[in-house]
Length: 333
Image 1: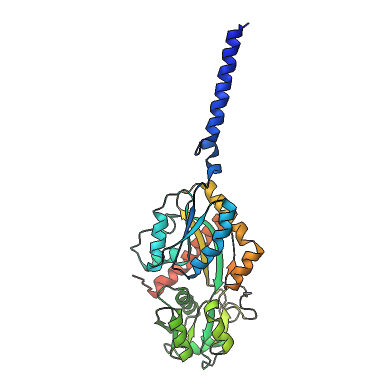
Image 2 (image 1 turned 90 degrees about the vertical axis):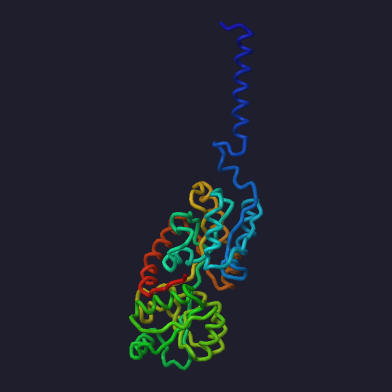
């Protein structure tokens, strides 16, 4: 039998082991609770230029995310170069969950238009969630004698090379929507490039171009006033944002779908536990009824899906639009 001194020594060693284990659990960054220490400093969401769609969505998300995570969430605007500056900022950031990118389709489609980019859209990012979608609207000048997609296709085929469409910039959502339409319908329509949506709509209203695929928000006032005629919406299903307007697919071009999306990504190699936490908190915000109403009033609809579903969306979009971009010879250099 051990003497009293030996028992006291065993008990002291046991207490020391328990104390060491407890301290280990409390040390920030300890492997046992590494996920539980996140976040412990401000988080930034890198978006495009101030006032743009991505900036708007980021600023609507930031307060709720800050509240959910208990840390300040800062929106950092990095506009320019079609999203390259924003993307590069996030690619260079530490993969620790403190930097996210909120941007649209251009991030993963730009490599098809420029083969000299400082990032790879698949290799360098970890998808978190698809945040929002917004439809484009096929609109025509009222003088054009068409009121449906089917009529437009017939009319365009009868006048190859005579119809012009406006685009707000090379690789812009309206440009790609029109090129997908041109490719699927087999029509010869000519792009007239502009520096921005406002300039493109001005020419369309003036009649120097005949059609365009602008965003729902940008063109709504002109449809309401009768200066432009809405023909169809580019979503696969009718959109609540433009009630009563048929889809391009259902009114003459089966299979057509093109929407503007905004997704949230982190640097590649961000720990899966952190990606999961961010996904859960962001999706919770996007599913909030009041938040959805605010987004809807801004012309966008919330999504909020899993990282795997968002990754599949990116892959599918790259496969479809990559071919359209290459076939059309679109170059954004």
